[in-house]
Length: 264
Image (tube, rainbow, N blue to C red; front, side, top):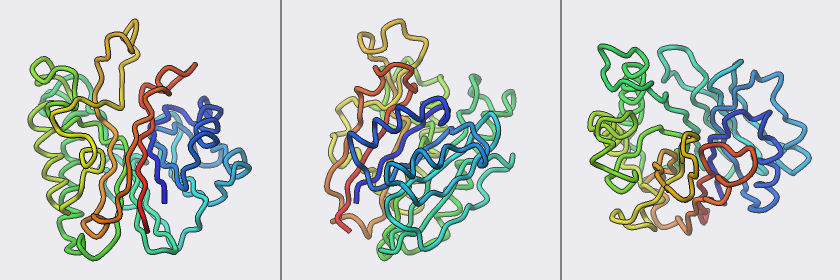
């Protein structure tokens, strides 16, 4: 079972890129974030024609929004209350094979890494705390196959960013955020799938800023997009891939897809 996650940064604008990705990589499931689209305007028919007939969509006008597109049917679907602002930032489905999948879009947090001065940063910290609390109440990581994916908007490790020292005071890599994300991971004993295959001392990214004149030459990226697996899937993780080439596609998102394959 191949699962992909991608912050598409407007699903209507980049539906053709999504279609190209689906044709080239053929994931069983694609989880999207920042769809920026109310449910009634989601391009559902375009994806259904490509074989992704099973869709769970949770969107809103202008901002945020998440969606799960699948070749495989759902046994259940819904959302959970993580966001104090009422944004559409999380969705979950359970497949007929028993796998539970969560798709997250964690708030970016604005530019000022001070919760007292910046309500957006305070919101981000609150969201991460709620994630940790939600999964910390569960005790079934070793028994239940669960996958959490999405744009978590935090690069937690030293080599998840192009310069650890220069980004310590930049939102997405500040100590308070990285520690909170590690708390989230520890709460359910999550496995960081990418780092199962890429050593922690090796740099790897999934996001490159639009501000860079030449993103590829400067390669100043951050690993903001993640796939986590419960301990029940420890022996089932077969591969991972970050599709870096897509950052160079015309009208690209600033994020690229991250994929993982599981033997379920």
